Length: 131
Length: 263
Image 1 (cartoon, rainbow over the protein chains, first blue to last red):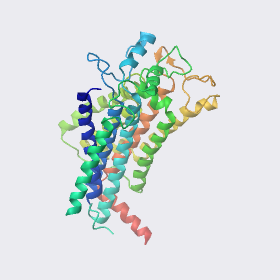
Image 2 (cartoon, each protein chain N blue to C red):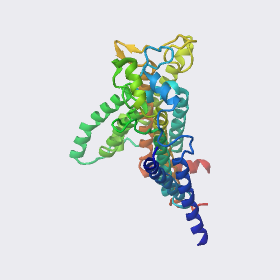
Image 3 (cartoon, one colour):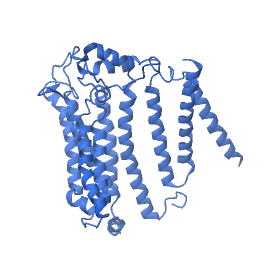
Image 4 (cartoon, rainbow over the protein chains, first blue to last red):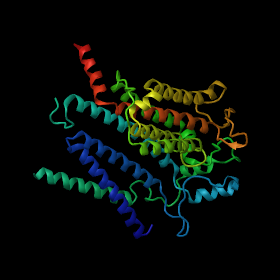
């Protein structure tokens, strides 16, 4: 990889890690439970985006872009599969992210219902006044 | 005040050093990768390979092949986490019956638009789920899309309207039916002499789900897993949405009833 490509990926990685830092700051320092929940969703989305960045690949050549790991030409036989492997991105991070997104949705609903109950019992979503 | 600056500076240092480390190969490879890793290459080339019948999944979609075949047991436990969270929500709302009182809902225009779009969303959800082994998509995505229909009906018509068609018990039953279906598809191979979660025939175990049904590529068990997973996810998410948006008074009453029991 040349210097230009390294600096491009540096920008992407820097923004992802900065996002992670902001999300962690939100989870640790905000007393408001709803804000903590929002920070947690930012954290999980950043983790998913990071997995996708790792699974992405450099362009095989300036004319050919990477393609999704789906074979579109079933009747192409062995040659079509080899051609796909030349251009396809890594399918494994995508498979992990796919389940992580749906699980994240269910966990967010679960946490939201806990916060809702907390608000019903204590009349607030701030952590400091509980106890 | 000084500790505040210390925290800010240390966070900035961590961010900068981590991004430099990863960009210059701390993960053992450049980001993005120059080519496919050998494992990823094996997944992509073996997903659809009729010339290699003992290793292939017979699905042109490499991601679904990984989700339900290459790493099927992973997905099984990920599904367990998903339903753990849903069961947790249902437990928190125990004793609460979403009221069947049908409210007015939104205006006639909004209701007509929802009545037209709801079946369309459902059709798209079915297409995403049932074509999961051919095109991007699958049971998780199809199920989550189908749950949107419940949300649309709930907002435009009212919770009572939704509950009159799909009660809490019925949603629980549908979710359990989906999970039982997944378990059945996973356990049929060992009953018939194969391995748990087996799809196509392997060197040591000849059991195989049919890759083609009536000339259409179904990729063996992938179609059934996607079907049952979409059913379970749609019913589970609909159930949690229904409980989460129950009216305040209904929940209040149930919680108060619990206090009386405790006394």
